[in-house]
Amino acid sequence: MQQPWWKESVVYQIYPRSFCDSNGDGVGDLRGIISKLDYLHALGIDVVWLSPVYKSPNDDNGYDISDYQDIMDEFGTLADWDELLAGLHARGIKLVMDLVVNHTSDEHRWFVEARQSKDNPYRDYYIWRPGREGHEPNNWESHFSGSAWQLDEATGEYYLHLFSRKQPDLNWENPQVRAEVFQMMRWWLDKGIDGFRMDVINMISKAPGLPDAPAVPGQRYVYGGQHFLYGPRLLEFLHEMKREALAGYDVLTVGETPGIGPQQASELTDPEKGVLSMVFQFEHMGLDGGASKWEQRPWSLVELKQVMTRWQQGLEGRGWNSVYLNNHDHPRALSRFGDDGVYRVQSAKLLATLTHLLQGTPYIYQGEEIGMTNVSFPAIDDYRDIETLNAYREMVTERGIAPEAALASLRVKSRDNARTPVQWDASPNAGFTSGQPWIQVNSNYLTINASQALADPDSIFYYYRRLIDLRKANPVIVYGRYELLLAEHPQLYAFTRTLDDDRLLVLLNFSAGPLALELPAGLSLAGSELLIGNYPAEGAEAASLRPYEARVYRLR
Ligand code: NOJ
Image 1 (cartoon, protein in one colour):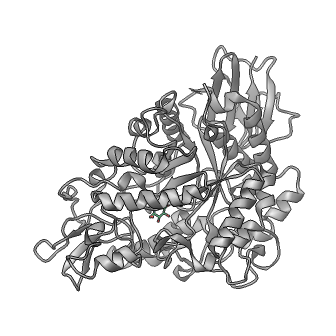
Image 2 (cartoon, protein in one colour):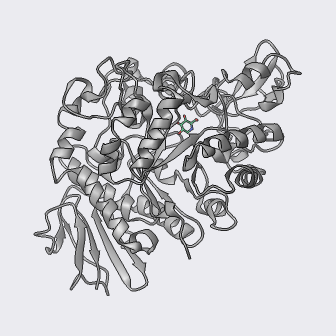
Image 3 (tube, rainbow, N blue to C red):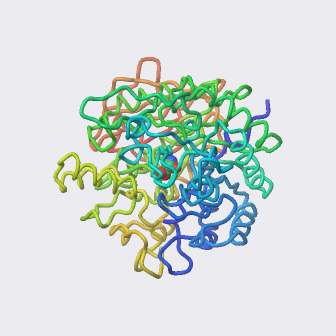
């Protein structure tokens, strides 16, 4: 059977605001990306996913869109975008655009109209409700703190916003909304793009009646996920999208789907009956959080293995995984799951080995390929992200948490960790901009930067390149069945991948110490071939793994 191209691809995510600035205004832009196309080509990736570049007032850095069919002024023009697409395609790289249609900006023409009056033809494009005894229509909490409802003084009703109040939710129950979205999608597809990453796409169908979330003592607003994370009409809407917008185009679609499990994911990504190529699941992103992501707890390897294994097995033969450890919404994977100190290089390569050897399509987030780390901003004024700023305000003013403690938690979890500018070289501002960057550059850019990585044959960058080449040469890496070994081992992540009689063994030492290698009965390295490792091959025979050592063998 002919397999879809996106299973064999590696995707690279660009967060344009922080990638590369060509005109010195301190904000990354399309021409900046164009200037780095050879860099991307050298890395060997197949697809670029571009975070939103559409017109936006930037309340949430482009995830609040005011015009879906035009480019944000700071990023350039549609002509620049055409050039970017052509430049990618000329290098054999595909382009996946971000599709943010759970909500628009409140500055989108539809919402500007909708708030004019209750009988405006666009009113029903959004979700309006009268107040309940002078309060919000229900108790749902926004993802960015506070109520998910905003009172519109002029018309006396509230509108729903699951994210910021400048991101009103679209009313997908309205067929006209769906028709507009599908038409816009076809407009981009006809320009020649290769797919969509669909922002919180599992939230577009809300439970009828918008019921309250079960109360939580001491909390005025409560997360209402059970009423919108896999709503009753979700599959119907996405089937309609498949028919009306996507049919006839050979594209990659990846749904961002927080809060769903493997069963639902396989429903969404089933090769025949499904609606999407793959989804981003979030279970592993929650392993070091508490009731909220800001509450910290140490993550454990045993749990990480359980979660990854549940997804690997849950989708085997039923759907398709996307594999990632970080993106623009999460801390740097290296600081979170690896060691951003002494073993920075080794642990970055170990994490890369994991994401590239699991079954599914691997995603690399900009800067990951050079081992960028979390940033340690001294003050709240250094942060830019709306989620972070709102959470800090709530922690300090409403929950009485000491500012230093709140800041400590931001340093670990803020999305801004992933949004500091890409470190290109050791020149001022890491070569990201000749002006004042919109967010500070991480001070470690003098040693951690792309120019250094390109000059060092043993760099993290070239290790990614080798992993990508390995994947291309070995179908077992793409299609092989996954099997976990030594599930309870607290430091070793070991698994096999098997396709017909080809069998790989992946060994990952998730610790800063040496680890004696005791393979389960029946497995032996005798006669095996070491395909890749993050230490010099000499010494790989030894019966112990070095700190953060990763090895992949082809077993005999
Ligand atoms: C998920 C996006 O990845 C995130 O950056 C954004 O804030 C929310 N969806 C809202 O669009």
